[in-house]
Length: 314
Image (cartoon, rainbow, N blue to C red; front, side, top):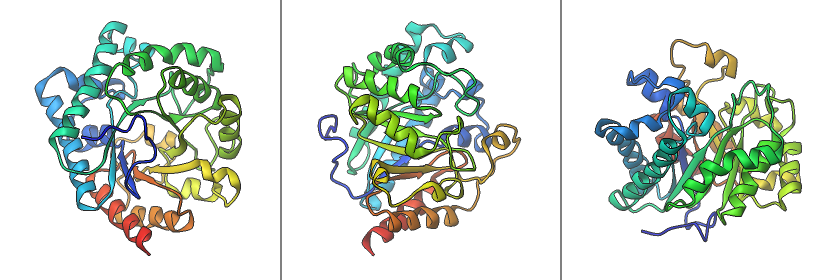
C-alpha cells in the first residue's frame, strides 16, 4: 500500500475524509468507559483493538465507495506524559502504546479497501483545550511534545496531526518538533461559538503567528471540535484562508462548556451538517479534508462524504 510521508498533503484524491468522533461514540452510544477521554487503553486488549479496527475498516470502505481518500487518526490524542500519568501510565508504557496505535493503523491500511489511506498520528494539547488557563511558551511546547512525537516518528506514520489546539505557542512547538523529525504536520485549532480560539485570538492571527515562527512549515491548518455555525462566519476570501484546508466538525451546536456538562449525546442532524460542510466546499473549493468530531458517527461521515463529493463535481 502507498505511503504518503514524502508526498503529503498531495495525495491522489480530491477529498480526504477524517474521523475523530470515536470517543463520544464509544462513550454515549456503545457504553464504553473511557476515563480521561482516553481511547488508547483500547489497544491493551483484543476487544478494544477490534473496535478500533472496525472504525478504520468502515472509514476506508466509505472512502472506496465515494472515491475519496481517508486519513486514519490514531487513538493517541491524550497519550502524552501528563494526561497519561493521571490514568497511572508510565512514560515508557505510553510511548509503547503510541507506537502500537500506528502499527494497528498500518495493519488496517493493508487489510481493508483500496482508498488512498494516510496514517495520521493524532496528538492533542498538554492541558484542557477548552480552558487553557496555563499556556506554554513555544520552547516549552517543543520540549514537552518531543517525547510523544519522537516515539511516533519511529513508526510508519505519514503525518503528525495536532488537534484541538487553543493557542499559537503550543502549535509552534509541535510544528518545530515535527520538522525536527522530517515529518509533515497539520495544525487543527478549535474555536468557541464566536469563531475565536478559546484564548480569544482570531483564526487569522493564530495561523499567521504559527507560520511566521515556523517558516510556514505546517502542511495546512484545520478547524475541529466546533459546529459550522460557530466558525463559518470567521472564514473569508482573504489570502490567509488558503492555509485552511480541513473542517472536522462537531454534530452539536452546543458550546464546549455545555458539551462537557452533558449527560446525553447531542448527535445533531447528520444531513444538515453534511449540507453545511458541502456549502463551505462550494464557497472554498480548495478545502480538501472533511469529517466529524464530537457527536458524529458513520451516519454523519457517510452523508458528509456524499454531500462533499457532489459539491466537488458541481
